[in-house]
Amino acid sequence: MPFTRKSLKGTALLTGALGLSLLASGCSGSSSSGGSDQTKGVTITVAWLNPPPPQAALDQFTKSTGIHVKWTTTDWDSLQTKISAAATSHTYFADATDVDWSRVGQLGQLGWFYPMSQYLDVKSMRPDMPQMSSFTSKGTVYGIPFDSSYMVTTVNKAEFAKAGITTMPTTMSEYTKDLRQIKAKGVTDTPLNIPFAAAEGLSTHWYQLTNAFGGSVLDKQGRPQFASPSSPGYKAAEWMVDALKDGLVPAGNINVNDSQGMQNLMAKGITAATTSDYSGNVGSLYDVPASSSVVGQVEYIPTPGVHGPVANLGNPDGIGIPKQAKYPKAAAEFIKWMTSSKNQAAFAGADGPSKVLPNYPTPSRLSAMKALTTSGHLAQGQELTTLLEGSKAVFPAGAPSWYPQFSRAVNTNLHAAAVGNESVSAAIKAIVKTTNSLAKGNS
Image 1 (cartoon, rainbow, N blue to C red):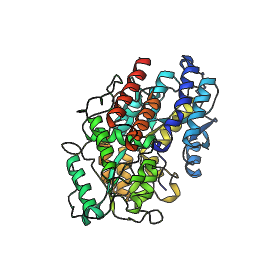
Image 2: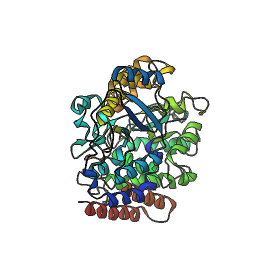
Image 3: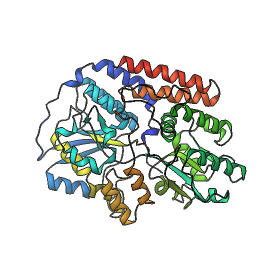
């Protein structure tokens, strides 16, 4: 079972709760809880999505630092609710916890998390962590990349070959032509996997395809860049909806989210390509006989663009320190240890199964990715490392504080266009209107 990324985590479901948090907190987040700088002999609470690292690893951390760790595992939705509730009520929840890329703008505006430069040498870490920019808002880093999730293009090369395609596409025109050829040759009637359910996975798919068409969805001021029919974002929306209407995408995908598409379509050979897949899915899903009927067939390729391959967009999780932490300095020591190159490689399987962190995706450090690749424990490790090196943030200036509302407008309107309840033009106009309102209201 692949790691459950944020694109499954229901950002749209959090919109109302987060909006209330913004109203309730006002400027209250600017105050500090005055946590202790003590490290020796203290116990910190780490609230996270995954089960804990092996006990032997935690014991070694305690032995070397004097810091004990109480690890609590919570699903993403509940975790965000608890983070918000604790911050708005000025109560302690955890010393270290999740910082999702899409919430960095909110956290920066509300002052709920400590700037990481207050405790760690962020500048020296940045070159080894390409996705640090995803956790930066207005020049301040609020979380250290915990993993390196990014959107990748996967293709079933066996199905491409059956259609007579042996050279993988590098442009969107080639990609489209190849998909149509696979369908025409009868290899599979529905070669393309796009999740059209009104959920976060549809939003991230559009971001990646907007990037493929040569643009971004927002500028540095948060203004929409997709209003014109000639814009990359508009073209991406048209391409997606046309792919469904033309039968390249299964009709049932109207109600399919991203994980379902990966597990039930790509992993079963029903579709031959996913433009916005999860990094690491080849090793954790498609090459696992228990969950896949296409073992050894699916590979990563550079994402096709208008004139050639384009950078992949990131959607990673980070780890940070809430302002209400009891022991922020001890938490920083833990984060430094947890995100070290050696530990990341070990958690991902470089040193054998006994040292694996359950459900851990690919490391956020390039050095750890290279070590993992050298160990032979990462499927297509060299390809993934190269894609990570060239990855970039979805939003050049960091995710806006109103991201959940924006994402909801994106996926509900694109879903409506796919269903046929409104035109692509109407969907884009609705998203533009919402975006302008959000940007103006938060300027």
